[in-house]
Length: 313
Image (cartoon, rainbow, N blue to C red; front, side, top):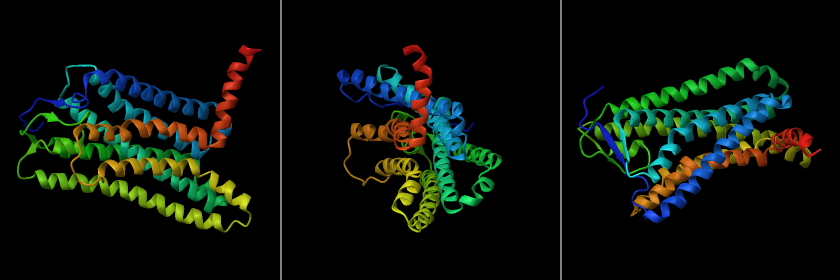
């Protein structure tokens, strides 16, 4: 491991907030975290138990739910513990590990959204070739590539950042080991070039995913507009609504945080803004898929009726 002048970092997080508000924040984020876990586990269990949902779209949805769970596990528990603790330090190795896993699952999530967009494109634009193009083996391979790609991105960014020397301070003005907050603590002539390379790597990957998703939907919309009946157009487009909503939420909140104009933002407002992407977006995901996807919603209802109807009778 490269020489560094700090052995641990201090996560400022919510420590600057009024102390009497922290229990309320803790309860609020804890409930959102538990709902995220339970909601995604419910989706995974429903897809697993309902044979009618054993299709590529729901295989990808299971993989997406897994990445959401692991992403929140990498960040939220530590944030919750620090809210009620006076000890906010994190070791150098733990910080690097947290960054690796948060980037790995974050990028995996983006890659899966891109693959899900491709799945909708094939289903709508090439329905007769769908079973051939999206076979079980192909889907498993695509999911494997998304996880491998996320791991490579996570490892690449983590190695770049933690190869630096940290000597300015060990105080991270965030509630987890956030890459831009860490880069501000590094010293040396290569600081600016490393910061630029990290931003380019991340932005290129995320914008590449978004570009391919938008491209898929351009072809999808063109195909839907060729459907003669309004009912047919509505029915076809409804299969894309949940995925499209998640894409808008995912990239929308990311844009608010990372593309916000430079100005006098307080540390507290920046902290709350960051939770929209790390806590609120994963919280919304199972709600959107459960409510906006009719087939999944009916399967969840059917699953609950099977389990609880014998008890009521």
